Length: 194
Image (cartoon, rainbow, N blue to C red; front, side):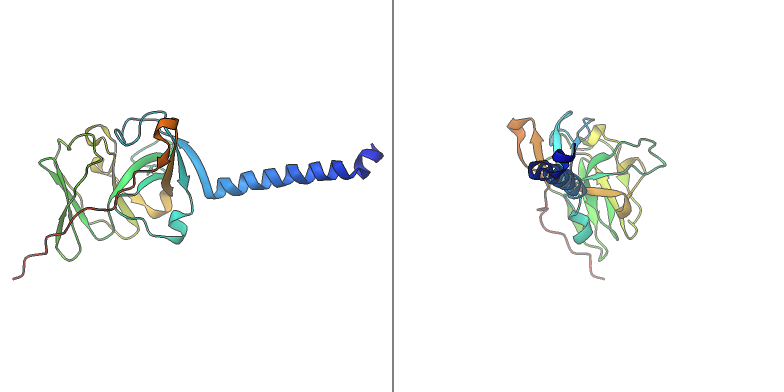
Protein backbone atom coordinates (compact mmCIF):
# COMPACT_ATOMS: atom_id res chain seq x y z
CA UNK A 1 0.00 0.00 0.00
CA UNK A 2 2.88 2.38 0.81
CA UNK A 3 4.32 1.83 -2.65
CA UNK A 4 0.94 2.58 -4.23
CA UNK A 5 0.66 5.89 -2.35
CA UNK A 6 4.17 6.83 -3.47
CA UNK A 7 3.44 5.92 -7.07
CA UNK A 8 3.34 8.83 -9.50
CA UNK A 9 0.71 7.10 -11.67
CA UNK A 10 -1.61 6.66 -8.66
CA UNK A 11 -1.58 10.40 -7.93
CA UNK A 12 -2.03 11.20 -11.61
CA UNK A 13 -5.13 8.99 -11.67
CA UNK A 14 -6.45 10.64 -8.48
CA UNK A 15 -5.90 14.07 -10.06
CA UNK A 16 -7.79 12.99 -13.20
CA UNK A 17 -10.73 11.72 -11.15
CA UNK A 18 -10.83 14.88 -9.01
CA UNK A 19 -10.65 17.05 -12.15
CA UNK A 20 -13.46 15.06 -13.80
CA UNK A 21 -15.69 15.42 -10.71
CA UNK A 22 -15.02 19.17 -10.49
CA UNK A 23 -15.65 19.57 -14.22
CA UNK A 24 -18.93 17.64 -13.99
CA UNK A 25 -20.27 19.72 -11.10
CA UNK A 26 -18.93 22.94 -12.62
CA UNK A 27 -20.78 22.24 -15.87
CA UNK A 28 -23.96 21.31 -13.96
CA UNK A 29 -23.85 24.76 -12.35
CA UNK A 30 -23.87 26.36 -15.81
CA UNK A 31 -25.68 23.92 -18.12
CA UNK A 32 -28.21 21.23 -17.29
CA UNK A 33 -30.25 18.83 -19.34
CA UNK A 34 -34.01 18.46 -18.95
CA UNK A 35 -36.54 16.05 -20.38
CA UNK A 36 -39.83 17.41 -21.74
CA UNK A 37 -42.55 15.56 -19.81
CA UNK A 38 -45.74 17.06 -21.24
CA UNK A 39 -47.19 18.11 -24.57
CA UNK A 40 -47.62 21.76 -23.53
CA UNK A 41 -44.81 22.95 -25.85
CA UNK A 42 -45.84 20.96 -28.95
CA UNK A 43 -45.05 21.36 -31.81
CA UNK A 44 -41.82 23.09 -30.76
CA UNK A 45 -40.83 20.49 -28.14
CA UNK A 46 -42.16 16.94 -27.99
CA UNK A 47 -42.67 14.64 -25.01
CA UNK A 48 -39.37 12.90 -24.09
CA UNK A 49 -37.29 15.42 -26.04
CA UNK A 50 -34.10 16.39 -24.20
CA UNK A 51 -32.88 19.97 -24.03
CA UNK A 52 -29.86 21.75 -22.54
CA UNK A 53 -30.61 24.79 -20.40
CA UNK A 54 -28.26 27.74 -19.97
CA UNK A 55 -28.50 28.40 -16.22
CA UNK A 56 -26.43 31.60 -16.44
CA UNK A 57 -28.62 33.28 -19.08
CA UNK A 58 -30.55 35.34 -16.55
CA UNK A 59 -27.71 35.83 -14.09
CA UNK A 60 -26.09 38.17 -16.63
CA UNK A 61 -29.00 38.96 -18.96
CA UNK A 62 -32.67 39.87 -18.96
CA UNK A 63 -35.48 37.47 -19.88
CA UNK A 64 -36.90 38.35 -23.32
CA UNK A 65 -40.23 37.75 -25.02
CA UNK A 66 -39.96 34.56 -27.05
CA UNK A 67 -37.43 32.83 -24.78
CA UNK A 68 -38.21 29.21 -23.96
CA UNK A 69 -37.53 28.85 -20.25
CA UNK A 70 -37.34 26.20 -17.56
CA UNK A 71 -38.67 27.32 -14.19
CA UNK A 72 -39.82 26.14 -10.80
CA UNK A 73 -43.61 26.00 -10.76
CA UNK A 74 -45.22 28.72 -8.62
CA UNK A 75 -46.65 27.02 -5.53
CA UNK A 76 -49.52 27.73 -5.26
CA UNK A 77 -51.31 27.28 -7.62
CA UNK A 78 -49.18 24.46 -9.06
CA UNK A 79 -48.07 21.81 -6.60
CA UNK A 80 -45.52 19.90 -8.68
CA UNK A 81 -41.83 20.01 -7.82
CA UNK A 82 -40.91 19.12 -11.40
CA UNK A 83 -39.58 22.13 -13.35
CA UNK A 84 -41.83 23.36 -16.18
CA UNK A 85 -40.97 24.50 -19.72
CA UNK A 86 -42.90 27.39 -21.35
CA UNK A 87 -42.30 30.46 -23.52
CA UNK A 88 -42.10 34.02 -22.15
CA UNK A 89 -44.86 36.13 -23.70
CA UNK A 90 -45.44 39.09 -21.36
CA UNK A 91 -42.81 41.23 -19.65
CA UNK A 92 -42.99 43.41 -16.53
CA UNK A 93 -45.20 46.48 -17.02
CA UNK A 94 -47.16 44.90 -19.90
CA UNK A 95 -50.65 43.43 -20.12
CA UNK A 96 -51.51 40.36 -22.21
CA UNK A 97 -54.85 40.04 -24.05
CA UNK A 98 -55.85 36.82 -25.76
CA UNK A 99 -58.95 36.73 -27.97
CA UNK A 100 -60.05 35.49 -31.38
CA UNK A 101 -56.99 33.22 -31.56
CA UNK A 102 -54.57 36.14 -31.24
CA UNK A 103 -52.20 37.28 -28.48
CA UNK A 104 -51.75 41.02 -28.04
CA UNK A 105 -49.38 42.86 -25.75
CA UNK A 106 -50.39 46.22 -24.32
CA UNK A 107 -47.07 47.91 -23.61
CA UNK A 108 -46.55 50.44 -20.78
CA UNK A 109 -46.81 53.35 -23.25
CA UNK A 110 -50.21 52.06 -24.43
CA UNK A 111 -49.01 50.76 -27.80
CA UNK A 112 -50.36 47.38 -28.86
CA UNK A 113 -48.19 44.60 -30.24
CA UNK A 114 -49.99 41.76 -32.01
CA UNK A 115 -47.76 38.70 -31.82
CA UNK A 116 -46.80 36.79 -34.95
CA UNK A 117 -46.42 33.24 -33.61
CA UNK A 118 -45.42 30.71 -36.25
CA UNK A 119 -44.29 28.26 -33.53
CA UNK A 120 -47.70 27.55 -31.93
CA UNK A 121 -49.54 24.29 -32.52
CA UNK A 122 -52.86 26.08 -33.03
CA UNK A 123 -54.37 29.43 -32.07
CA UNK A 124 -55.77 29.71 -28.54
CA UNK A 125 -59.51 28.98 -28.36
CA UNK A 126 -60.02 30.99 -25.16
CA UNK A 127 -60.26 34.63 -24.09
CA UNK A 128 -58.06 36.00 -21.34
CA UNK A 129 -56.83 39.40 -20.13
CA UNK A 130 -53.99 39.52 -17.64
CA UNK A 131 -53.46 42.13 -14.98
CA UNK A 132 -50.52 44.46 -15.59
CA UNK A 133 -47.47 42.30 -15.02
CA UNK A 134 -45.55 43.40 -11.90
CA UNK A 135 -41.79 43.97 -11.74
CA UNK A 136 -39.71 40.78 -11.88
CA UNK A 137 -42.68 38.68 -13.05
CA UNK A 138 -43.30 37.07 -16.46
CA UNK A 139 -46.37 35.84 -18.31
CA UNK A 140 -45.67 32.45 -19.91
CA UNK A 141 -47.61 30.30 -22.39
CA UNK A 142 -47.06 26.84 -23.80
CA UNK A 143 -46.81 26.62 -27.60
CA UNK A 144 -49.64 24.07 -27.48
CA UNK A 145 -51.95 26.89 -26.41
CA UNK A 146 -55.08 24.80 -25.92
CA UNK A 147 -53.40 22.11 -23.82
CA UNK A 148 -51.06 23.98 -21.48
CA UNK A 149 -51.26 24.84 -17.79
CA UNK A 150 -49.68 28.27 -18.08
CA UNK A 151 -50.19 31.92 -17.12
CA UNK A 152 -53.65 32.06 -18.68
CA UNK A 153 -54.72 29.75 -15.83
CA UNK A 154 -53.84 32.42 -13.29
CA UNK A 155 -50.15 32.50 -12.38
CA UNK A 156 -47.08 34.53 -13.27
CA UNK A 157 -43.47 33.35 -13.02
CA UNK A 158 -41.12 35.26 -10.72
CA UNK A 159 -37.59 35.95 -11.88
CA UNK A 160 -36.40 34.04 -8.81
CA UNK A 161 -38.23 30.92 -10.12
CA UNK A 162 -36.36 30.94 -13.44
CA UNK A 163 -33.84 28.12 -13.79
CA UNK A 164 -32.61 29.15 -17.23
CA UNK A 165 -33.14 29.55 -20.95
CA UNK A 166 -33.46 26.52 -23.20
CA UNK A 167 -30.36 26.65 -25.36
CA UNK A 168 -30.03 23.41 -27.33
CA UNK A 169 -32.23 20.51 -28.42
CA UNK A 170 -30.08 17.40 -27.92
CA UNK A 171 -32.39 14.39 -28.29
CA UNK A 172 -33.63 12.85 -30.47
CA UNK A 173 -30.70 13.45 -32.78
CA UNK A 174 -32.98 14.38 -35.70
CA UNK A 175 -33.98 17.50 -33.69
CA UNK A 176 -30.43 18.39 -32.61
CA UNK A 177 -29.78 22.12 -32.85
CA UNK A 178 -30.30 25.49 -31.26
CA UNK A 179 -33.56 25.91 -29.36
CA UNK A 180 -36.43 27.70 -31.08
CA UNK A 181 -36.32 30.90 -29.06
CA UNK A 182 -38.14 33.53 -31.09
CA UNK A 183 -37.66 37.27 -30.86
CA UNK A 184 -39.17 38.76 -34.05
CA UNK A 185 -42.72 39.88 -33.42
CA UNK A 186 -43.41 42.64 -35.91
CA UNK A 187 -44.33 46.22 -35.23
CA UNK A 188 -46.37 47.69 -32.41
CA UNK A 189 -49.29 49.98 -33.18
CA UNK A 190 -48.73 53.27 -31.30
CA UNK A 191 -51.17 54.35 -28.62
CA UNK A 192 -53.93 56.71 -29.72
CA UNK A 193 -53.09 60.38 -29.20
CA UNK A 194 -55.79 62.52 -27.57
